[in-house]
Image 1 (cartoon, rainbow over the protein chains, first blue to last red):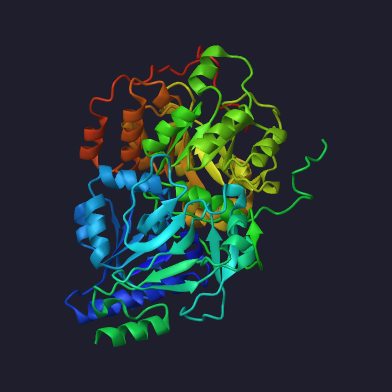
Image 2 (image 1 turned 120 degrees about the vertical axis):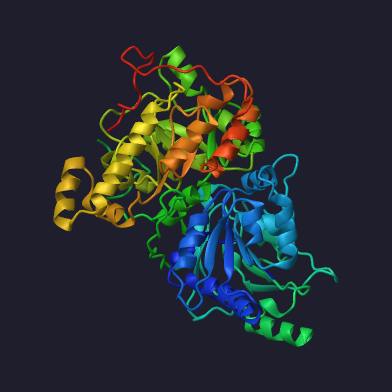
Length: 255
Length: 331
């Protein structure tokens, strides 16, 4: 399972924000209960960016689902994790420091088999293709069959907040405040027969899209805010999911 | 004084900004009341949020697109575009102003990471110009010659966020009260000497520790003593850290300097003259980036500090310091 959000972590401090985290954790926790692990270990990639915000949000969860949280800077720390969150930051910096720290390859392997959630820069790193990359291209971790554009709305003065309806969250009728800071935008889903299916749980309203995407020429393209990926090569561990329909249908497929 | 066109229409109560945690001083952040309907550009959450994305990173001074590319390749999380690095401003003297917008635009086009630029203290028109060309952050900087020796820019009216320097907690909270969404130390730029940045960071942290155990009555008096707005001081005491992101700046020249500032509780590091005035800028830049991530790992710090070539020539900070002490500019 890969969870991809283009929002920034500070929104998790809004009352609605913790819902996403809780849903994410419920899944990994249930999985741990079925297995041998006593307590789920969730790692937060702490190379650069807003990783402490994720940590604080996780530690605020009710004790029944609160995981052990570790900051991940080395391959040894990554090895301890049952799931990983890649925070917002600068994707170019995170990728470079990951390579220099020797965690780039372990991360790629981790993503193939374990749940990973990417926010903002983390979402860029999880994509298979990126537009507005730095000159000469940039390294990605991959894992999600999507094309993403960095800085989809332009510079910081275009950054904004907007309420979002997210399927499958607790109290879903209460909108989720998305914070878009030099945010990336998902341009295309590129599902292939071999890649796991992608479920979109929320879309930004069309009038808030970057002008280039809301023009008639592009109206057919999906405008995605949060995308979830069901990693079907992995068994039933990721089923209790944000999206009820998504969870149920996957279970049926695998049993 | 006439009202600046882009200033706030009237006096407003500054919002209590968002809290942030740092690696050295972890703390939960307060909830943000983001209940506004619809699209909201330039909210304080959006402004301070970008600073949160920069944490654990290195922001490098660059003077042209080529240097900006070197910085981006070396892992900078943002670049600061300016005409002369502080060491040259210090050496050459004269009035230092906002950079040529054309040069800033070239840097914006050359890189994908955020681009910051400096304005003179109090020069709100330079800030209006930089906002209009789309820079991502403005540094109201004492490194440039102040345009106003009494007033800072009213930063609430701008969509673009501001970073300001501070020597102690009172100064930091006054800047936040004026709308700064990020704070940095006011170490002596262009000296390659980290002593002043250390002094400022220690002062801020020490005052926060004091405030954090005070009763409300004591906080009222402490706010008066350090000339800080009470509501911001109270929030700082509750969080046990500054309510916005706090970077180190001024005099940082080596990976060890950067890690020192991180261990003293900074969220990230600005490096000015230290990189492009050294023997091998790309290598040194990369080493400082790694040092900021792994600031607690002495073995790794030793590895990245090896064989970096000549560091910038440093200056001692005394009464003969060429260009004078910049930190005294702006209060």
